[in-house]
Length: 124
Image (cartoon, rainbow, N blue to C red; front, side):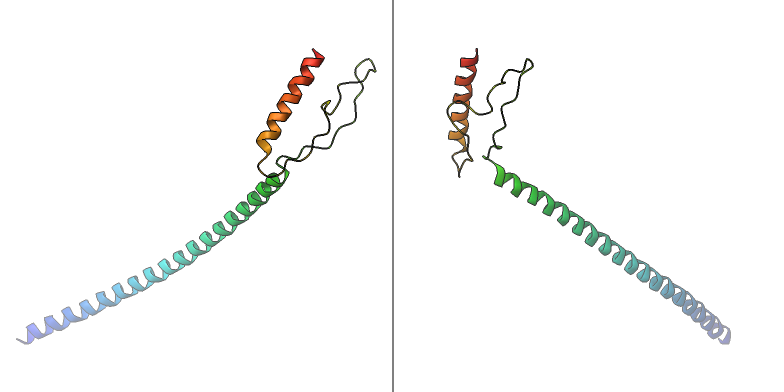
């Protein structure tokens, strides 16, 4: 029976040694996962900040475009042609173009198209 007690004691020591080794492995795995999680969190935050920066720049561009929509550039000076003659006038013959207010851009484009049609018919 003393042999049995000795074998049980040896088995308990081996199991304790194995359990300690496994505990160290689990602990190191936990630490490695925590480091990886922190790195991943840092990368996600960095990507989020870059994305927000790009979105902000795009939003600013879109707001600038929206503020300029319907506004025509200022009139150009009449340019001289190849032979020194006057080139085509910079403005339509019926008057000055102005910025379009609100949702009247459809009417403005229709009017612009009709003025351009009239202008080019006269030139032809």
